[in-house]
Amino acid sequence: MPIETAALPYDRTALEPHLSGDAVEQHYALLVADIERVNALVAGGPLADASLEDVVRQAQGRLFEHAAQAWNTDLYWRCLQPPAAGGNSEPAGRLAEALTAGFDDFAGFRRQFEAIALRGFGAGWVWLLQRTDGRLAIAATANAATPLTGPDRPLLACSLWQHAYYLDYQDQREKYLAAWWQLVNWRYVASRMAKPAA
Image 1 (tube, one colour):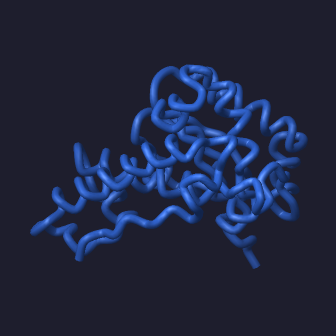
Image 2 (cartoon, rainbow, N blue to C red):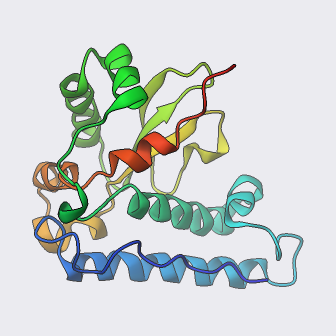
Image 3 (cartoon, rainbow, N blue to C red):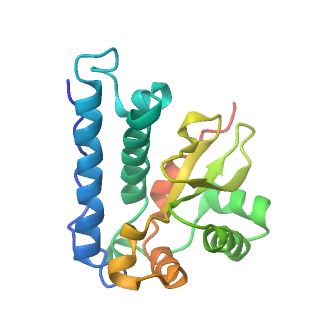
């Protein structure tokens, strides 16, 4: 059964003025194209009925690239919310406590996250991850690479692909990041954390 492209969790213009409807539409169209390529590549093969996550974990080559990019992008959309829905907030509860434990405070986490995002060259992603021992960490991956294939749990994804921001900010990644922070859905990010061991 073909993998379906998840709908955006909000209207294409709902992230304005931070991300324009045109930028969202262009970025989302690439997600649709990646899912179409995944379905074409798995058709008639052993992964034909696999979930997108399973394809990412088992695939190689072009199939992996399209599947991983689709999974990364879908998580990216879910990690954002319209300003009217509570954007520009800060983490609370267990997530806030874990960020304080790992980075001194939210401001410290944000500084480290931005430094990694601005240091990277070319396309890729920056992630907030939860290690298997519960600690939080920041990592960057190039191109379509994804932490989904490793032991860490991805909590938050920030796209550093130019199609995520070029229409709005050209090559000014720092302005894109400043806008992106205004949209992060911290409740969703917190919901992805593994439950503490009993």
